[in-house]
Length: 104
Image (tube, rainbow, N blue to C red; front, side, top):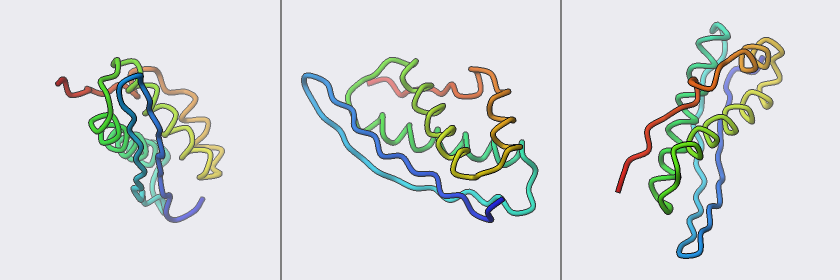
């Protein structure tokens, strides 16, 4: 497994009224750490990235936030090239990816 995984999100959300685009990166240390610990850090980083992206854009349903976290996490897991991490991610339930979206 690689020593450092950089999680990046580049999301473009458009509605009829407004458009928001942002890109961000967070590094997650993976060397010498257990699969559950690495996965937890990846999910936390994905939540942070999605929260930032969703806060800057138009209001979205809570389900979209969970979808964002899940997809960013899955992308980062694929980039890690770790079979253990992929298997662990697949075993996670929907609740792993839920996050609160700030109301306006």
